[in-house]
Image (cartoon, rainbow, N blue to C red; front, side):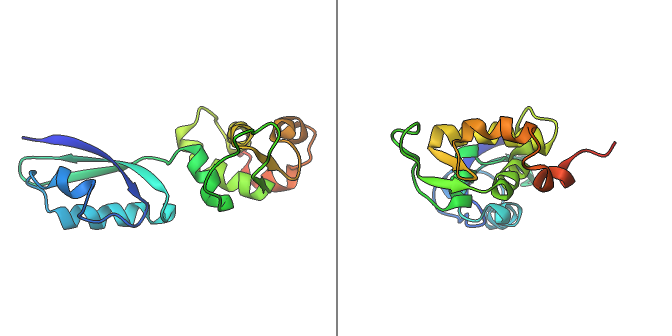
Length: 163
C-alpha cells in the first residue's frame, strides 16, 4: 500500500487537520511525525503555501520532498501584499528593491531554468511585471537592461559564480 501524497501547506504551520490529516489518516505513517518534519523543512517559508510530497511505505517509513512556492507567492510574501494589480501595466501595487529581488531569486533558483542568481532575478522581474510590481521605482520590464548596464552590480556581485 505504499504511495505518494501531494499537498500545499503553509510553510512552518502544517497541522494534522486538512489537507494533510485526511490524506495521511488511512496510511501506516505517524501523522504527527510527518507534520513535524514538514514544519521543520518548510520553516523558511513561514506562512507561504509550499508544495510538499510525502512518499510512504507499508512499514510506516516516509520521505518528504519540499518544493518551492510559486514565484508570485514569494514576491507577495517578500513585499507584504495580498493580490497583484488588475491592470499591471498601469496600476502598480508595490515596489521591490534589487536586494529583495535577489532574495526571491535565491529562493526560487532551484526551480528555475536560470543557472545563477543574476539570471534568476531576470525571471523574477518578469513575474513582477505580471503582478504590477515595480523594481527600484521603475517598470520591471527595464530591469534586465538596467542589470546589463551594471546598475545593480553591487547587489549581485556576490551572487556571481566563481571563475
